[in-house]
Length: 127
Image (cartoon, rainbow, N blue to C red):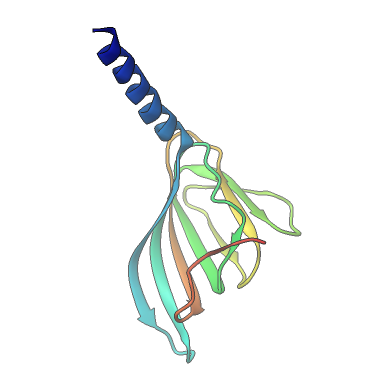
């Protein structure tokens, strides 16, 4: 009888640890060609769990984002940290290394529009 309880405790701890780790989720809503040859617009819903950092990365084109819910800190290399919250927007130029950290309570939700080189990954980790 002790073994099943131990298994349940271990399983519960694993699930709790996974929930605490949190994640970033990018859900592509639409992709469409734009007037610049070789480029496309990608519209995505971006969600950062509480306390989560996106991780330093860049995009192969400009990012234009609008914060739907929550608040966080935008960290663009070479610039002072910037607080962003629901109702605000920001632009990150192509190839610029940056990060975002959810500093608020609950999930931070954004709409991101990326005008990027067609066929390249939407985001690449910084080196």
